[in-house]
Amino acid sequence: MKVEQIYTGCLAQGAYYIESNGEAAIIDPLREIKPYLGKAARNGAKIKYVLETHFHADFVSGHVDLAKVTGAQIVFGPQAQPAFSAHLATDGEELKLGKLTIKVLHTPGHTPESTTYLLQDEHRRDYAIFTGDTLFIGDVGRPDLAARSELTEAQLAGLLYDSLRTKIMPLADSVIVYPAHGAGSACGKNMSKETSDLLGHQKQTNYALRADMSKEEFVREVTVGLLPPPGYFPLNVKLNKEGYTSFEAVLRQGLQALSPQAFEAAANETGALVLDTRKPEVFAKSFIPGAVNIGLDGSFAPWVGALIPDIRQPILFIADEGREEEVVTRLARVGYDAALGYLAGGIAAWKAAGKETDTIPSITAAELATRYAQNNSIRVVDVRKSAEYETGHVEGAHNVPLDYLNEHLEALPKLETIYLHCAGGYRSMVAASILKARGYNKLVNVEGGFKAIADTTLPTIALV
Image (tube, rainbow, N blue to C red; front, side, top):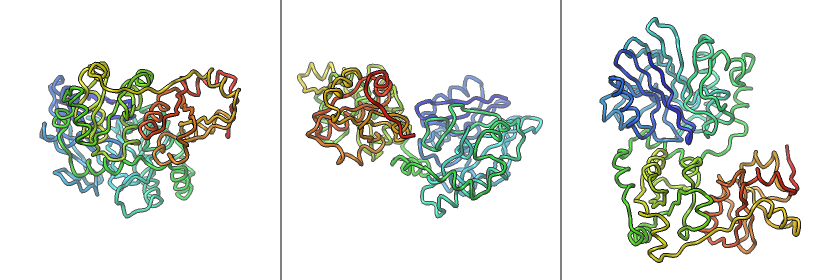
C-alpha cells in the first residue's frame, strides 16, 4: 500500500495518490495532470479512480482531463450531479483498489455533496480518512460556499455537525486524517499549518470535535467571523461541475512568445490585463504602464483570484525567463484560462523597442519614521488583513485590506501622497500597482513592511 500526499503550498492544497497491487486512485487532483500520470507510470500502476470530495471552489480540479487520458472513473458522493460522466457513489459504498477498500462516507455540511473517503488496508482495518473540506487539522470547512444550494449556511453547519459526529468521530483514534487544505486556504477560518494528524489528537484539540458541544454551539462557532469568499469561488465550482477546456490547450495558448510590438497590439485589441509576475522590488524599478504586479513567488494564484474579478479576463504577462509555463499553470489552477501570451525578452526587450516604462518609488521603514516625525498626519495605508492590523499598526494608519482594495478605492485620495505597507512588502506592491493603474500617481511603497516598521521609532498601537 502506498499513500502519498502531494501538497501545493501556493493553494495550501493536498491531493493524494493511493496505490495497491498495480492500481491507483487520485483524490482531489490539481489541474495539471502530468505529475499523477508520471507517478503511476514510474510505479507500473494504472489509475483506476479519480475521487472528488466535493465541487471545489478555490481551484479547478484535474478530474476531467485525468479521466479522459487514463480512462479512470470519476467518483463523487451523493447529490453531486456533475454535467459529465461520473459515478455517484452511495453512502457506505465500497470501492476496491488492489488489495485495499475505499469506503464512501457521505459527510454533507461544507457542501451538500461533500464526501469523506475511508481507506481500509488489505485486512479491512481502518487506516486513513480523506476528508476534503469536511474536516481540517484544527478546523472544519466553512458552510457558506455551496453554490446555488437551497440550504442556508446555518442549515449546512447543522449537517456538518451531524456528519462529524455520526461518520467521523466514531472512527478509531489511530485513523490518519488527510484533509484537502492547510493554513492559508480561504476554505476555513483557522487551519493548522500541519497537513495531517491522527484523528484521536484532533478529537482532543480541534474545537469543532469537542465532545460536549451542542449543535447550537457548533453552528454559532463555525458561522461567526466568516469573511466574504473570493469572487472567483463560484466560477471555479461551475468549472468543476460542468467541465472545462483541456489544460494542454490552455498551456499552448498561454505560451505564445510575443514581441514588444505584438504584445502591445494584443493588449490594445483585446483589452487584456497586463500582469507582471516578477518580484516586487524588481517590478518597482521598471514596468509597463498600467501593469499589475502579482509576484509569482508569493501566494500568486489566490491573489489573482481575489483581485481579478472575471476568470475570463484576457491576460498578457511578463515573467522571469524560464518561468512562463509556471505562470500559465498557476493561472489555470484557479480557472484563469485566457492567458494570451507573454512578452518575449521581458522588460529589457520592451525598453530596447523604445517603449515607455513606469516606476513606483520605495523608501525604508527608517525613512518613513523620519517623515512621520516631521508630519504625523501623513497618510499611511496598511493593506494587511484586519486581524493583522488589529494586533499592531502604525498610529493613525488606515487599514484597507488588499483583498478588498477594489471595493474601497473611494477612501483613498488621489491628490495626497499615500505610503503603502503590508507585512513584508509583497502585498503593498500589488496594491501600489493596482492604484497606479487607476491613476494614483503619489504613491510610496515602504520596504520590509510592518516587520521593518516595528524596529523603528514609529509609534504603533494594538486593538487586541
